[in-house]
Every structure is written in C-alpha cells, then in structure tokens.
Length: 545
Image (cartoon, rainbow, N blue to C red):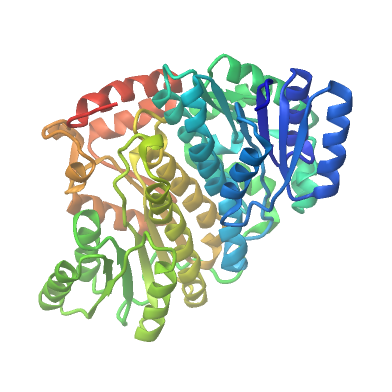
C-alpha cells in the first residue's frame, strides 16, 4: 500500500480538476486521476509526477457507464492505494432546452452530475471512516443556491442537490475524522463555456466575477481541512449570495432570463391559465396515488372533471380509489400498477398512457420513498431506488409528457417537492432534502423554458402533512406539533390552484410553516442545520447511531 495519502479526482484532465491535481501533488499526495480524455490525462500525470515527485495513476473511464464507479474502485484495489481524499469534479453542461433534447443525453448528464457523485461518495467514504481520516470535496456551484433557469434544468438542479447532500453527510460523519465539503464557485476560466456552447453567457459576465480555477482549488482544500460543509469561492460571489438571501425568489429567476434571453421556447402563447380542455375531455396522471397527497390530488382533479390515471404499487388500494372517483364524479379512471423505483417504470407508464389514448394535460409527480436512514448505512440498492423515485422519474415523466402539452398549448406539471427543499442538509436528510432541492430547481428551469407555450411547471412545497409518511419515516408519534401539520386535501387543492395560476414554486402550509420557510432562507445554514439535526434526533423513534 502507498505510504503517502492519496487523492482521487474525477474530471482531472483539465480545468478545475487539473487544478485540484496540481494542488494535491504540491501538498505531497499521490494521485488517482480519472477522466475519459486519455492523452491529456497521461500528459498531466507525467508532468505532475516529474514536477512534484509523487505517484500519479491514470484511470481512463467514461463516467456515463453504469458500472463506472465499481470499475474505478476495483482499479484502486489493483493499484494498492487507499483513497484519502475524493474530489467529485467531473461535469458537463447541456446547452439546449430540456424539451428539445431526447431523453438519453438528459439521463446521462444527470448521471454524471448527480448519480456518480452520490455513488462515488457511498463507495469511497466507508473505508475513510474505518481508517479514521478522510476528505470528500463535491464540486457544486453558486447556481445551486439560485433558482433554476433556461438551459439549466439538469445543471442547476444537480448542484442544488449536492449542497444539502454534502451538509447532511458532513453532520452524519461528525466524530469519524471524515469531512464532506461542497465547494461552490461561480464563473471560472475553464473550457466549460466553449465545450458547452455557452459563449453568449461567457461574454455577458463582467470581469470581476471570473475566478481562476487554481484559486478555487486552493480555497476548497483549505475549507475541507477546516471541516467546512460549504464554501463559496470569491468575495463577489459571497456578496451576491448574501444579497440573494433577502431577494424574492421570483426576482432571482429573472437573472437567467437576462443571461439566456434568446433561449426560451417561442412556439405557442399562454392562454391566461385557463384549461385548454374546458368543456371537453381532459386527463391527468398522478403518481403515488394510493394514499396521502397523491390520493388527494386524484380526488381534486376528478372533482374538476379530469379523467385520472392513478399510478402506485398497491393494486387493490388503487382499484378501490379509482372506482370511488368514477362513482362520485362521473369521470373515467385507469389504474397503472408500477414501482417507480425500477428504471423501466417511467417508460412503461408513458407507453400505457399512449395505448390508453388519453391526452395527459396534468402530470402530478408525487411518488415518494422513505429515506430516513444514515446515508452510509443504506445499501446502494436503496440509495439508487430513492434517486430513481425522487429525482430521475420526476425528470423523465416531465420530459415525456411536455411535448403533447406544448402541442395542445396548455398543460400543467406539478412536482411535489417540500419545505425541506429550502433547508440546509441535516442529520438523516442526506437524500430527502437534497432531492427536494433538486426538484425545486428543476421545476423552475423547465417552467422558464416552456412558459411562452402555455405550459407551466410548478414545484409544490408543503410542510408536514398528515399522511402515512410519518410512520414510514420512523417518526415518533406526536413529534410534529398540530400547528405545523396540514391535511393532504388542503395541500392538493392549494397546489392545483397555484399550478393553474402558473406559479413556478408555491409554498403551501400554515402560517408557522411559512415562517419556518423564511427562517430557512434567511438564517445561517450551518446553525440551522445543527438545530434541525438536534430536532430530528428527537423525532426519530428508536434512533440508533
């Protein structure tokens, strides 16, 4: 085994990844450099080894490969190295409208920006814990704190995920000797803007906002050494973030309209928020429709005259619900028994709707997954299932049904997020809060793109809701005060009203819940994260570390 500490860096051939490699080599670390650009990677490894006298191992790997993480881990075993520092840096930006891209490149980009980071962290962190020392640096972005915008559906949403993910895992690892840090740079002088076709954005950015990647890497290493869960690079960016905290989110969304003026969808015009099918047949699809908010949405939509496709795993419950809706409201209903934790489920749902022949005017992405366990105690299969339900299926179903809505010049996609999407990461919220932050930014981005077509996408953000969800998440009985709880019927009704109005994000809840939302937004993240962690430890029944 190597006697030096070892840093593994993804996306190490150029840009920020190359700067991280230089910094760790200068500090005497041996390196494992991961990238798919073999020639540049080999040249970099030779230069770093000669300049700093360290070992620089090359792993040529395409991270789009579903087996990439296991291949990288196996290669480190073959090399006989223990990874002490993991830098999740690889990334790429898709410079096209979400609705104009086919699904495979969107799926691959989400994997690169989000799935690979989570899987690499899940694979390489446990050995660090066993050895009592380690650092994980996740390259997020300033955009992760901002609302989503045009041409940012996958990028901003992934970065929004990584910030609370890193905060939460850092809290879960306290006392182990392992720290997790999300580094949040703004605009950097790298090849990203040229490679992604973003020259128009690059040319519109004032000079004082540009950062050198070497400086970003240096700041990240120092932040990680101090155990900071989040670090924003550059004083101008920190000032911008401070101003953003007190700026209405709707106003912040205008920033991307300025940066991407020409990129929004232009076909069709909005028809003022009225149902395109008023007086005619109209249909809605609701996932997670067997209980809770999903069942309430199904009823709300049936009452409005929508035929309803109900999706969930429990056939008997769905069939009873469907029969009840048809009897009470005189609408057609159709049951689809699907487990959205399976990768093929969204395709099966789309195919079934096409066969059914009902034009889907409203999609409610509501299906959830109980994720209240410590991240590193979860088997990877459970982590992957959570990501599939909470993130991937939301994006895929949104992508699948948008074209029909745009063609008909009316439609609504309601993505059920949560107030938790606005909070910093905290104990046992590693996946849930992160996924909801991702859904909020994703919904804002797609909504900004499709608004002129008459289609709107809404992130619905309720607080605690009286459903079976509390027991599924092992919350102690009575742990949530009555004044902080809402009925699921109220959430669905208010959510649908907000979607009809065309709200990109809507917070529904009691007055105390709305106050909490403001505190999450304005307060210091690290302090709030600790307070939430202490509260969550008390709420979780039979909590064991």
